[in-house]
Image (cartoon, rainbow, N blue to C red):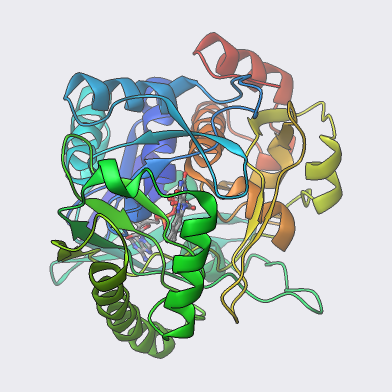
Length: 425
Ligand SMILES: Cc1cc2nc3c(=O)[nH]c(=O)nc-3n(C[C@H](O)[C@H](O)[C@H](O)COP(=O)(O)OP(=O)(O)OC[C@H]3O[C@@H](n4cnc5c(N)ncnc54)[C@H](O)[C@@H]3O)c2cc1C
C-alpha cells in the first residue's frame, strides 16, 4: 500500500475542488487533488451544465471574479466560450451567463492545475479516513485497484456529497418540515437547432409549449431551458427532474436510468413540437446525473434564508453571491425562482466553510453550511468558485501555520483573497 503526504488534500475535482486546489497551491501549499472520474469539472463537465450563471446583480454589479474569472478568460482564449453575456428569462429577469464548451473546460482545468503544481490523481475514489482526536490524519483512497493512504495536514471536502466529512463524523443539516431535496437532472445535448427561429419564440409561446410538453408527459418540468454550445447549433437541455438522495447508491443507480429515459422522451417532444428543432435529435447524454443538493454541512455558522434575503453583512465574509433563490420542487412541473432586488447581493462568511468539531478540514463547493433555501441561491458555479477560492486560501494558511480551523484569521484571509483578485464583500 502506497502512502503519500501532502499539505492540502482536496477530495473531489468538481469546479469547487479545482478552484480550492488552485488557490491552495498558489498560496504555497503542497496540494493534491483526488477525483474518482478521469477528468475534472464535476457537474460542470460530467453533468454537462454548460453555463456559469450568477456573476452580478440584475443591475450589473459584479460580485464574483478571482480564479472564476481566470477560468472564463482561459475558455474565451480557446474559443470555447463567448465570455460574459446576458439573457432575459421567461420570468422577465435579466440574467448574466457565461456559456462554455464542456469538453474544453476539462482541458482548461488540466492546464491550470499543471501550471499551479497541483498533483492530480484521477480514477481515485476516497473510501475512508482515520482521525486522532479532532484531526483527520489519514485518508484512504482506492485508485485503479491500488489502495493508497494519503497523510494530509489539512483536508478540503469538495466531493459535492461531502463523503469525506461524513466519514469524519461531521454533522449535516436536516431538511425542515415542508422542504424536499432539490431533484437531479440528466442534461442532454440536442441539435441541430435553428436558433434564429428558437430564439424568436416569445414568452407566451414558450409557456404554451412547456405546458403542452408537461401535459403530454414528455417534459418533467415546465421548461425548455438550454444553453447553446459555443460556436455550434446544438444546445444542452436542462428539463429533467428526478427525485433522489444521491448518497444512496441504489437510489442513485435507479435515478441515472430514469434521467436518461426522461432525456429521450423530452428530446422526442422537442423535435416534434418546438419550432426550430424539427431537424434535431439527442446527440449526447451527460455522462452522469447532475445533483443539485445532497448533504449540507452544519458548520460554525448556518447561512439562513433571512441572511440571503437581507444581504446580512459579516465581519468574516469571504465570498459573495447575487443569484436568486432557485428551487426545483421534487414533485410537479413548477419552479420557484425568486429574484431578490435589482442590486441585491449577499455574503458568505468563512464560518460556513468550517465543520464543527474537526480542526483540520474545510468544505468547498455546493455543500457549505446553508439552509435549504439559502443553498438554492449559493449553489450556482460562480458563487461556488468564489467560496472555493476562500477554502483553498484558508486550507493553505492552516497547513502552513497550524492551529484549528475555527481559529482561522478571517481578516488576514480576506486581505489575501482581495490581493489575489477575488471580490470580498
Ligand atoms: C442539472 C443542474 C443544472 C445546473 N445549472 C446551473 C447553471 O446553469 N449555472 C450554474 O452556475 N450552476 C448550475 N448548477 C449548479 C452547479 O453546477 C453545481 O452546484 C456545482 O457545479 C457544484 O460544484 P461542486 O464542485 O461543489 O460539486 P460537484 O460538481 O458535484 O463535484 C464533486 C466532485 O467530487 C468527485 N467525487 C465525489 N465523491 C468522490 C469520492 N469519494 N472520491 C473522489 N472524488 C469524488 C465527483 O466526481 C465530482 O467531480 C446546476 C446543477 C445541476 C445539477
